[in-house]
Length: 187
Image (cartoon, rainbow, N blue to C red; front, top):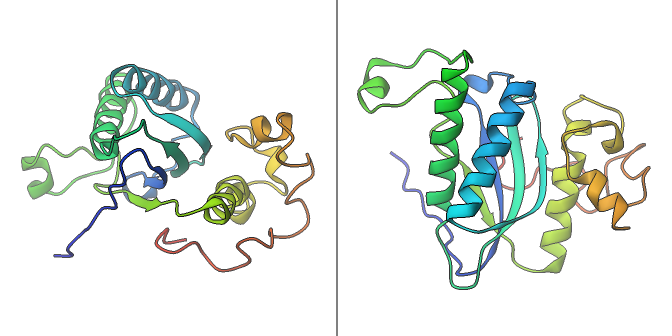
C-alpha cells in the first residue's frame, strides 16, 4: 500500500482535487451542487477556511483554499464535507456506485473516491499556475470552448475582480502551465 504523506503547512494555501467514485458524472446536477454548497457552508461555520478558487466538473472538482493562521486541518474539513454531501445526496435519491464488500464493511459509500489530491502552494507563481489550471479545466476536458462558458467556476468572480480578461483561455491553453498536467492531478 502506498505511503501517503500530506503537506500540512499551518495557515497555508492548498490546491485540491476530489473525484467521484468511478468518475460518476453527477457533480453538476442541481441537487448535487446544492448539497455541496450546503456542505461547504456548514463546514466553514465549524472550521473556517477561504475558497480562493473552485471549478466543479461532472466527475471531479478542483479548488484552492487558504486556512486560518496556524491551522492544518484540511483533511478534517474534506472528510466532513464528503460525509455530509454523501448523506444528503443518498437521502435525496442520488445514485451511488457499487462498492466492494470490504469497502462496505468500512462504511464506505459509492459516492467519492477514498482519497483526494492536495498540493501546498509554494509562492505567487505557483498560485497563479493553479488558478489557471482550475479555471481552464472545463476547456481541457472538452466541456466548453472557453472558461467564460462554464457556469460552475470561480472564473466569473476573477473576471469581475479584473484578474482575467473575459476572453482568457478561449483560443489556446494558458502559457503558465502549457500542455503538461499539474503534478499529481492524474489529468
